[in-house]
Image (tube, rainbow over all chains, first blue to last red; front, side, top):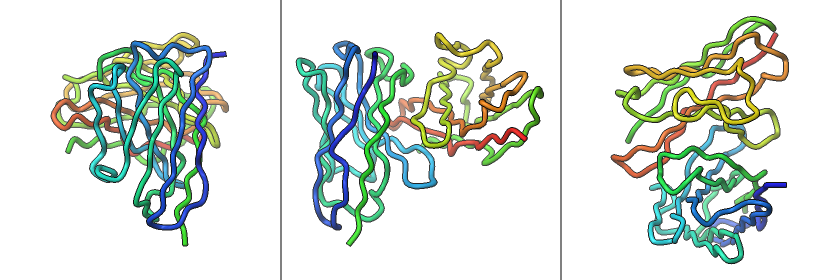
Length: 121
Length: 108
């Protein structure tokens, strides 16, 4: 079964850190970009970060730049997102998704089920 | 930053046709994708590059994109189509993935 599975979410205090992981099974990631998207409770989808197939290009949304860091390991078919200096407004379900190819224009053709991050004192 | 504007909600009766719009500056020059998110589930890709259906998506779903509006059309709406629908594109100006605010479609 082709799927992405996220893990690592949980409850953390403001200013704390978490590391999210996204693992692929039955799915090739080698020639695909990957992104993280989040969805606050009851809200819409918000793009968080992007990493190219070879990790040479990385982008972040302005809201997380300087606090979050993305990485990937194609051998392990996985991607991580390090969340530092967390804020209450970072509370959301975090999804990883695969781009349909190398180019940014490709749609997000596979999504994980998400992992919930709650930032609260 | 590039903004995509969707109506917040839409109600349609079973068997009718639903039309969901996504407005953006010269959006007709860009590739727009659409995602369906049923309650409690992850988003699923339902339309690629304006008007191309991924494998497994019924032909009741169609799309178009002209000038300043992209549109997702669902013909012969079914109860199972009740979901939030999001348009999305990649903005080469800001290097950002942009989502519309989403449209909650209720099937009455």
